[in-house]
Length: 462
Ligand code: OOG
Ligand code: NI
Image (cartoon, rainbow, N blue to C red; front, side, top):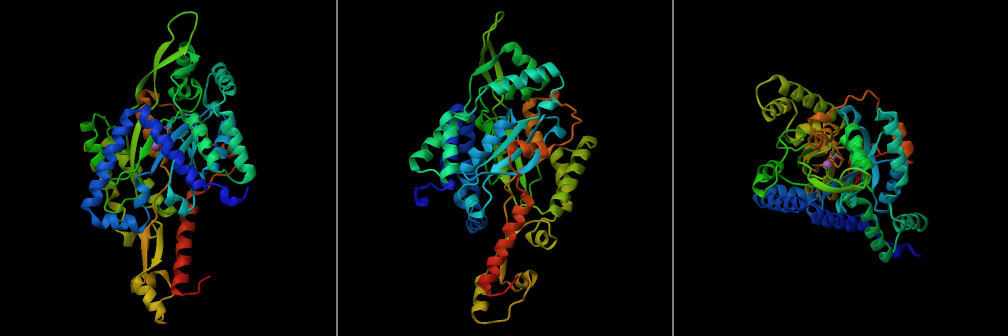
């Protein structure tokens, strides 16, 4: 088949993320309400702030905003992780980052599947936070064996999804009809099942080990557990939620509200209590409930360099420690701690705290065309007004926030103290690939933008 007959992975991802959103909207009505609220708040924010609108337009983020979201799934086995990597690759989504959630008392480790190239991110940056159970963290040996047995017996991918994935790998892509079938079939893996694969008593035993173990091992597949739209004003959505019949969690995770948004701020509403039909057993009824699916929103800001991230982690840790010992509320303590984090683009750039995308200004292009001598350095060109810099948006996740989201849905009684060390190597072995280093991706995007800017300004640079 000629390559031109293939649908671009970006298009398949766009189709898939829309189909998933439709499915989740039908399954979880509060998600639909949240989408409407976010759309309203975003439209308001853009109408009120023309500078924000033009900044987003300039960075190519205006078009992607209404389709932008992330989801999360929790897998059970290494084989499932291996196959989901291949499935996501068909949609141009690749594993980025390693997150060890055991430090937060959750027996999983994770990566985020997402597009990695600028053009692909601009088309649709759909991401899926993907966790896999760390079986070795289940203490009870008998239960551990039982979980392994249950998980090894299930098939979370349809035969057609597997065949089409294999076909895409062999042929280098899918044609239109295949792409549509692929989206339909892949969706099945993410679907909710109200019929459990275990009895109520097995469910209870799994639940006692950890609520997440029950969520992972009791069902036919790794149902999508939330889908998160991106808002331009998370405080407004948080405040608006109760009026729409949605009860948000108490605090927004991540950095405080700032003029220059950094990284990621997130908040969620509690998981639904949903009726489940358990497998029949000799004694007792097969009916019960399970809480897994919730709603979340997020506001994204600039990606931080290693230095910026270190400062962020330090200030966040300070705020969390102080919030426990001080009478003031968490938001106040957080805002105070982050006074130490520069809040204007110039300082963020000059101090090497964040990543930026550079481009020549019109004055710069005119100066270059007229043969004028241009300063040979980034700082020089910026000072001359010949080079502009725009924040590169953070496309990833934050482990402390993720832990907070997990916790708010698990209840406070779920704290476990796993002493196990993080196990990235085992994760990558199961995945069958190395995860991309997110810092490297941002650094590459910045370097590429500079390279192009030099070329446009006619400056030879190595
Ligand atoms: C994933 C939680 C992490 C986020 O936005 O940080 C996450 C989960 O609950 O499975 O989605
Ligand atoms: Ni999330």
